[in-house]
Length: 303
Ligand SMILES: [Fe+2]
Ligand SMILES: [Fe+2]
Image (tube, rainbow, N blue to C red):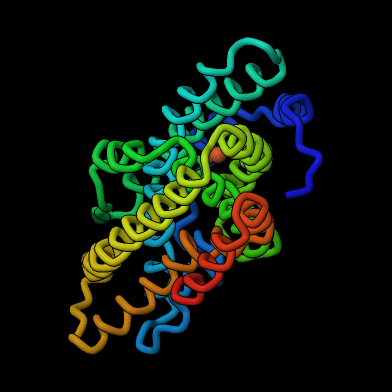
């Protein structure tokens, strides 16, 4: 991939951003439960034929809770991964060490940010929403793969986060302002992470043999399938949360329609938006052109 990313410029941009969790949530900064939390193109609940407008907002908010939980989950494995990568690169380049440690610090802050929003949600939503896990098992599974396989997966997640904000959130004036501010502030820091992760991937590729590169792309696909399996389970949990929140008992046909819509929305949110991002694909192509073609062949199932 042709780019002008550097540790020095990412570090400079990161120090200009530098927000605090307390600036975004807590005190009088509360979620407004009369508004949707997730943008339409990610939530994909408006297409469900039998829901009233109020029920659509409830289901949208349940997807919002799932989004907070999913990011809290992925940040749990990104943090130790980046700390490990940074600890191997502490000498030689001052900008690199500081930029990578800053990257890890921001991800630790994001874990807290998502946790705080989840707490606010749980206090005010009225019923329990469930989420797949446990996070420790997911972290253990993901980190059992090679460093390059995990770095490619993280690169997918970073570009996916950027796309969520730029394409779906930024111009949506109907969203709850607090939830929108979470997505904006997360995006501001993830913008540096996309660049730092690209540099991390490139440094690992330099040292990798062709068979290690092949293995890394197989692992990226395996981790994606693992996540897709989680998405199928989460769709069921979201349906249960919806029935608790609305006290509505769905018929089997309604349940099937809702589950299908939720799986489609989640696949696009967490898989499709990352694997078809042009910058993700151009990094993949620079490493192995055939891997890009393979990802492009798989993508329609998640878009
Ligand atoms: Fe993050
Ligand atoms: Fe990140």
